[in-house]
Length: 398
Image (cartoon, rainbow, N blue to C red; front, side):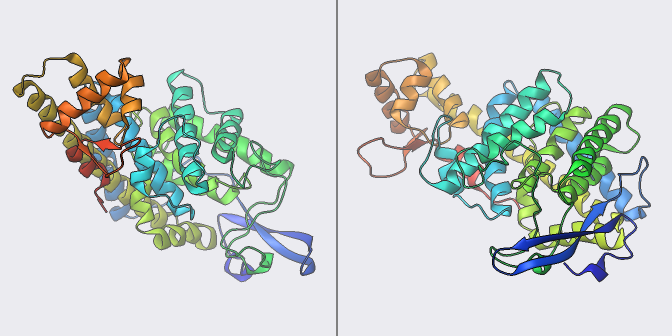
């Protein structure tokens, strides 16, 4: 980290740090400590206020669409898996989206990358359940989320589920020197723990009292979380989940269907540069404008995807009725194909509570009328999907 880039920063200060590297020996450097978040909106240009207004309108449109859905939780699941795949890719953990959509809730895959992505799904579901129970954002929620995210991965060290007590760096390479990292966040210790608690308080006050526009507040909170970098791993993923949580707690969204990471993943260099500009130059305007554009695009794309999925779901059910298949389980299987986009006969058996023979017959009937399709030539544990639904889930929007 080039200390000179941060010396004139109006948003934080440099503090000395030191250590002993097994390869390079004793070292001394500096870390960046952000000032507490302000209680008012930073100076913003008109174009940025317009971008914020566009984001609010897009979020309102998404929320209206989610409210009209007969079962919004059904559509939340595939949206969450798309977010899990994309937010993990931003951190260098890649699993194909089709594999993520095919995984069952209780899967414990051998593939390390897929395991991390599924951990994100479980972490997010835990956070959404926490909010649904009316519980406030709290430190124990953050630590529980981190523990879920790194469970069974290489990051599951003694630091799992804890605010870190080691120094970490951002943008360095494994085995490299601290001095060569792009950014060195807050040192571990009492002050880091205090900053995390202050961040939680700021989030709570901003969402309850509306002192700052929710889109602006979410942008500011995300920046501050990433600069603190309170965990030894997973900060980016938890920080992006916190964006959706902020909108839930601020009552901007009633359903956590928003996926934010695909847009940021497509612009990852700009994303990191805009965050860095706040630390080096105090350029809140650049970051908040970039963030607001991302939220507007993400909310609009999510709304379009949900609407398209609902249209196809309705169309497939109509096709079943036109074919004369009157069994309720045939209709329920379409819902299951949306909830679990790629599935096996065994999964249908368990979900519908029918025999394997009945599940197999039902799937074959829907294949025959073009509602479902077998995806491979496998003869064991055959994968099926509703191709029209799957096409929407797999399409790229950015």
